[in-house]
Length: 355
Picture 1 (cartoon, rainbow, N blue to C red):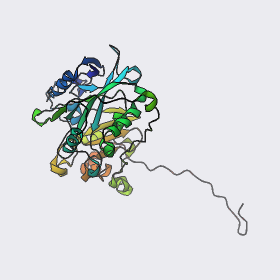
Picture 2 (picture 1 turned 30 degrees about the vertical axis):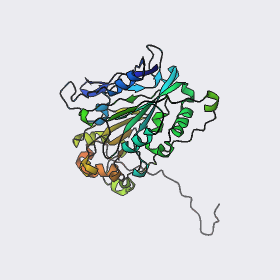
Picture 3 (picture 1 turned 180 degrees about the vertical axis):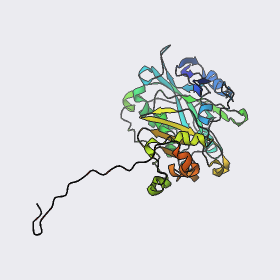
């Protein structure tokens, strides 16, 4: 028998005229056998199409939040999710999101072939964000015994090597996988025909003794290097808009252009919002998803990025050019060149030496 936890799917709602997804952070611990776990993952989670006011749910991030989520961590009854409350972690969930360059990616077919040789019982399922261009899926394995949250990063490193996945580290979301309390959205789609799920039986994934785990090194995350929008380095062009970019509401600019924006996520000093790309028609296959984002932090220039490889150089200036000076000026204060501080000049008589 195994133990794991679920969080209910988010509920589309409208608060003060703003459409958003009300998400549930309270986990429910479940006890069941292998068949129960597999059956729960096969259940089709229908994604709602509309908010209560009839507006369509178009942002990919909002849509997938409507699906329930699963976690290998278990908690005392009635306890809110958090690392400090975890009793043990009983499932390993490999999150393959393939955000890196094509040569670092692990596609569905290769993963199926790799796991077919493993002796372990496991389930693979595609996520809501999966596409032909960028395969996104999860590999779930039950553990032979629970792992303490403080040793989870070490166990994760051991498990990746044990499963023969070390060469695909950059294809995984290791940042999320290392978080003991991380939850993962279960499969869900507007079109259930697009869901793929496979499972195989075997033995539970072993867990080394704690003394052995303690000495396993945990390397730094591979990290995708930050690539500034090439256009953002053209400061004279950006400044030509004569707007104080520290005050620019880039989210408002994009909304006025009719770009679909997701729910705002609070970050240190500001917000991050996923959005559709204004140039989605030029994505590979013309895919129109919420693969772009805006970061808006107080007293700093806003950031625009698109995750699609053919838009790596796109940045703030591209959005400004698309909107034009009139719309940009409506969403920021005029730029005022700061006055230079007065520096006194000491008069020297001809022939005096410098002091």
